[in-house]
Image 1 (cartoon, rainbow, N blue to C red):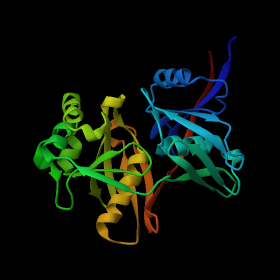
Image 2: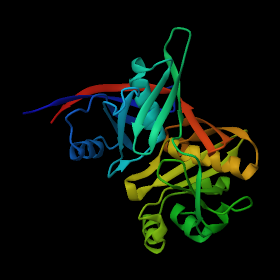
Image 3: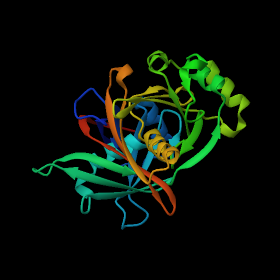
Length: 295
């Protein structure tokens, strides 16, 4: 017996169409199998697609499953922002709570005077976790830049996460930021020679720009050659920068996706808590398409 499922697509971390990071949301995925979800995410060919299910705890808004082209993810930033826009009518006091593999994710909505949602801010579900360091030569090779393009004044290339996939975070020069292009052979060599990576590697390059940050993210082994906006990399970066600074709290505006022609703006915060450093990421969103698929 065939089943029909509605979907919505959005551009996330932008206030204009054809910017930001693309996302597909299936607002009611009841009856869909895991294999169907994965196949649909691959077919959509966006960096992520979300599938909304009833929550295990009725006090929560929904259970949200996030898939990229090849696997399910425990947490991600722009899928939560976009899904919150789609499910905004389910918010209680402008707060939604999504059950995800990484834990309970809280999203807070901001509205304009007319009541329209203008932004959504996602709290990373876990505190900052700092992993090991990677040699500059390996990180640079993966990014397709010379080793001197990696800035090590404050830190070496370092693995950081807060509920999503771990990201290798490192600062680069303006010239290296512009020239970076992932070398998939170098990525494969890196995961083969570094068992601690568990076969996964995502690079998050950053550099200061004005009062904010400019970033690029590469994850070719997961099917994302470059990502236009990566909330689950922006939050550990914010947390890591706060860790380095020694301050109690901080905020950074991050610009990403410029080199792809899909400029995105991510607003991040980080603060110290008794449980560790916690971070948030937020931004705007624009609806694009609506449709349905019959399985």
